[in-house]
Length: 182
Image (tube, rainbow, N blue to C red; front, side):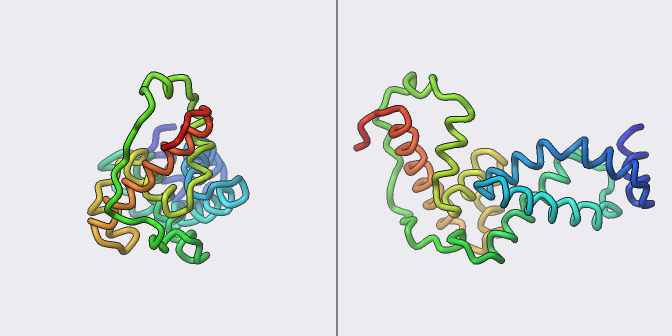
């Protein structure tokens, strides 16, 4: 079954198509939700809400781009909205000054020993605001103007928050690697 048939089946309410659709995208979407939620329970909640939204809006997909990219975008927006609605620290960027620069004092080759799991573990130790900015920019590929619009902040705030998030992540990684943090 191709994507077009799958989407049309989901729109018609065909449970087999809906299950296949979910099975096709759930692993990737869970990883996204875990990055934003920081733990399994929050990720599961975000993913469930995201798929509800996806199925509700599936009739709007026009087959002009990647179906996975479209689903991913909805999932990211769902994660951000849930963080915002739960009134987590996410939108309280007071602790993130825009003037600090990231200074990497460790040899880049030291970090080459880190696994993806190590980096995700360090990211999960960041504040929700730091984790969100870093995920949106560095992993999901959004530009600062898009991030600013999504989070309802200034573009310059997005840039400054990214610098602080990178610095915080670098310090977490240094700590993980037992490197002296300056």
